[in-house]
Image 1 (cartoon, rainbow, N blue to C red):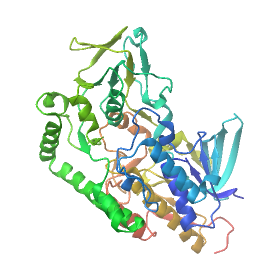
Image 2 (image 1 turned 180 degrees about the horizontal axis):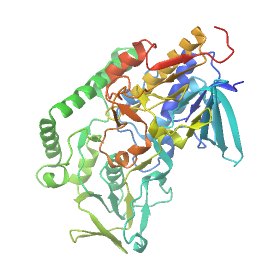
Image 3 (image 1 turned 60 degrees about the vertical axis):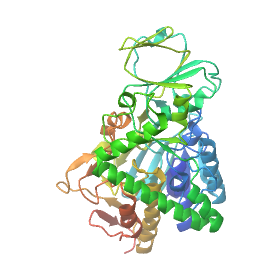
Image 4 (image 1 turned 90 degrees about the vertical axis):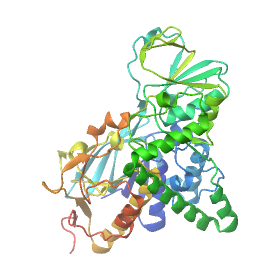
Length: 487
């Protein structure tokens, strides 16, 4: 006998959204949200470094059913956290969260058509929970530790070395010399935020990334909000931004050299001729082979122009007592070094899956429509886009899960499973971005195929058709009734 119908794992942006979808579309389902940490919010509660913000606009990062009401479209972390918690309270899902509950293993039993979850509790006492359906909304980052390279001589450094994922709340960087190692979204966020009070902030990058300036306030969205009801204005803005994202991605992949020139020109307009653009702002990869970094209102470029920040493109030779020695021979003095060197990936919370006593390693599975794993019954995973806002795909996945649950209830099915048969399609990596944090861990993920429905499509419009409107009947999905059930 199942304790609940559905268990949602994770109380972050996607987990709270999933619960709200259940409340809206499957009001009769009994569900719980299991959260390993002591607070709601996921990424937006964990990360507390200066300037933490979204790198996507909140009209697409926000939920489809809950209009974003703040003026700033590129939002601060605290505002996003408030949005998640307000949504949870509005739909009553906050009462369904169980904190300090880390799912370590999940075992499926075909005889009962149930999952048994093994849970490590915060008090150290293990427990278990039986459910019929598991929806993993853990994301794919390791919340316990970020990526920290093995820097030579780091123990000789007499200053303070910190990682953004575990930001010390007592860190005082006023009037200090700061070096931020990295060139990704976290570094682009940290540099202008710390430059407001630090003596000098230097961003040390091994290689450049693409950085674009974007208005923090969407003026067209604000005009629509004045003229139209909030829900209508939000929907129109959402579709406008989805369309622009899709066009940008298409042109970046179709005409990479043209987009490269445009991006370089825009950076030149921001910085003028005082910076070596070819050295510091000419990445070796094509646009959207990795995510573009966003500078709201050009804050990163402003910090560089006024001299509060600097950028150095070089490799680290070793840490010294007073800073960092570079391979070029230059030495960067530093009181504080921030290693914004990326995150460690941990697919689906590191849960160990088994079916009828047989271990099911995640890398041996295939992803069906980017949201179910072959051979694992009654399981869905929320994985967002790499080329657009995360929540766009998670909303569609939650829609699909709700439709799937209702479909099985109407027809008396106890469970379903995606089946990838040998020879269906060729195998390719689950994520095709070239970012270091992905390439370091891609072998821990499931596989994807070269064609539908095993292809992980980075296209919201196609997924909208395939997940929200397409038939649930599919030759790749098997539906079953529990042994002994009628019918």
